[in-house]
Image (cartoon, rainbow, N blue to C red; front, side):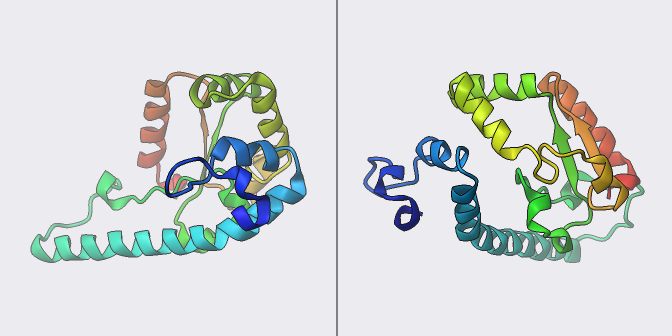
Length: 178
């Protein structure tokens, strides 16, 4: 990343971590820079996701070999692996997933959260949102993704954290979400 975007995107720590705010200022204002970042990062992310899923599967097989029970009608929490990625649809990694959920919020709420939770200015937040508009699942209409089967659940997220938890629980209990 530093080779592609310069050492200015690194923080001042001893291990020189990527400063996400500095890098974001570049990639969320230039589509070509975003594409370059994605080409650098996504292959590594996929490998990490595959490794983590395999680790979880091994642990579950180990645990299930020591206990026996029939599978429940509803998917229990320990039978779910959540892969959180803002642009998972863009990657076409559907082969890793039994279901793909899109969490949506209004532009107003998304802007407020970026300002409040990530310390961005309103202009920086708007630039990030604009950069994602039209991307699969991020700003583009999701209905066609649901229709083609790429998205298995759409969750509204304009309310409180408790409302989101409730909606996620409902989707988790709904077999159509997988």
